[in-house]
Image 1: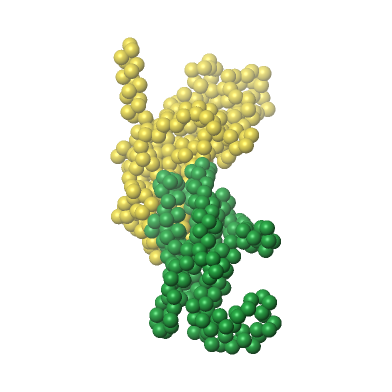
Image 2 (image 1 turned 60 degrees about the vertical axis):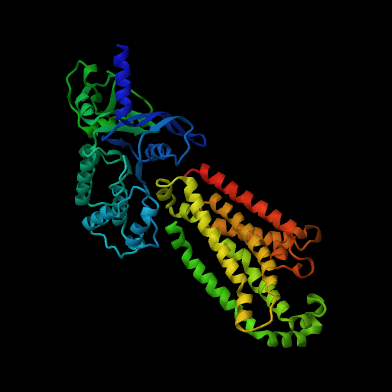
Length: 280
Length: 246
């Protein structure tokens, strides 16, 4: 039994690329990240999902050491690259110059890969960065990030400004890299995106992780249950009609009739309840 | 480091162009300057001291007083401030600091920026300091070249002092304008306060322009104090940058 436990722990250690334990971060008196726990395994696509201001960016910045954590532990076992929420590159440079200076800043960067991505994204090499649209700037930043050979990619809202086709292409690239052993830590507030790409999801609201599990498990385990207004269920209140309340609740915790809940419904219910502060 | 060189390139070209241009506004015109001062001498004597026009006839005095003691000397703190004010504050202001911090250890970012800008400052000050020597050799003027090295000590250390202070402000402030203005205001305040006799030591211009170099030689104590303060500012800037939230 003891051996089994240690073996499990050892295997977990090998597979785990990122572990965050009880992370807390204050901005003055405001608690921005509250006891966040996250585990990401190698080659996983992990998505941190939450409304604006939930604490997603602060969590990433604490993991990467850009912000100082107030308490908690962070284990990051590998090299990383980061696409920030605000995509800012050196505006006075041309696209080509930007790529040419990157090897002096990043050891893991492949100029050849970057040129291939640029060709695919159709970004003109001679164009000044200041003249690129926001979508093109995002693509250029993604080009740099994805041309870095690292263990884990942190992508903070990576599809902002991208057209639908470019989004789909980005998802393809992420999937391919993930199949080749690369890990992704992806933040977004767009549910449909996350549903398309993520293996594991954490829903973050008001600085707290309200739910974390594999996407398939979440969709399988949570259902919608309508009860009359006098009944309260131990779940997340999704909506109220004139006669009944609809709850999103774990399947094995109920004994009433239920319907399948979409991921949108689950997210909305959790987010609403978390924001109101009346946890399940 | 390649990026830092690209960043600073334009500033260096402009500084060299302006300063070399400035040098040629007076270096070839010794006779004209002497005659001008001779004509105006009675009204200027109480400000400039006795024998000023006579001294100007001496090439050593003319070129060093006009270059180090006036034109170039006045610009040394300004050149230092220009080279340092945007080093970090521009990265914060434009949000590009995240690109760097995610890819390089902060220590390396700091050292890269420090080395490139400080070496650039030293090259600029050194080159501009030896301009009188080069000009004197080309025009076959009799010049005491050892004077250049004495003045060079003062301008190099004075330049380093203002560079270090501005570097600290550049790390502290998140906008370029704050970093630039704070340095410029500090330069103005210390210079103005230095006109009050007991606070004369605060006027770094007196040291940089080498006002007392002809009579007292290099002021080593003041030099060491400026070097120590400058070094402390750089260390403090590094400490803050290591801890700064991005």
